[in-house]
Length: 166
View 1 (cartoon, rainbow, N blue to C red):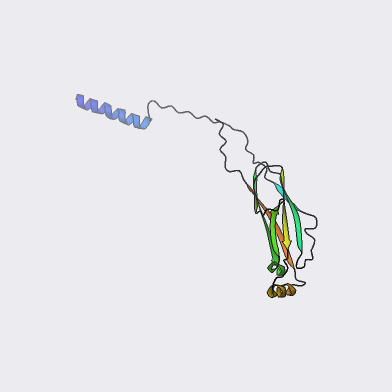
View 2: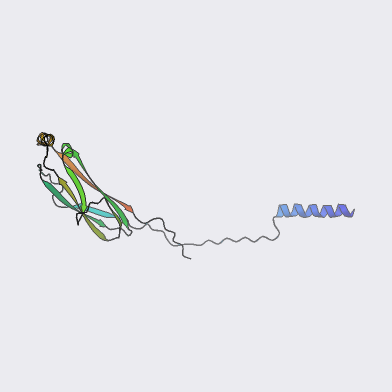
């Protein structure tokens, strides 16, 4: 009988603990409210020198230079890539170069601080013919046209940051 009673009490204790949960459980939830989240300003402008949108007549031996400015109005650092593409018939004879104000060839500006203005130059030149084939090509391009497109692409230079306030 003692075995039966002991077994019954143990079974009752197991069933009670399974159906009622743990006897000593502590659970607490605290909701913390944080501040508002606002995206930083990402904005830049690029302007070309006067006359950039004006058609230019060019002949072999000529060079045309345009000045451009990039103004970083962002609240963050920005990487800028600059590109110049010449299309049309004259693209086979003209050379296009992008340089900084010192004349050094560039393709990009890295980690540009906010509120900073950069300048760069795009130079289009038509080298003089040095052989008969180039001269024949240049004569054939007389009264032909082309279009110069300059683009500036800005990308956030700041990576993902963990703003832990510990």
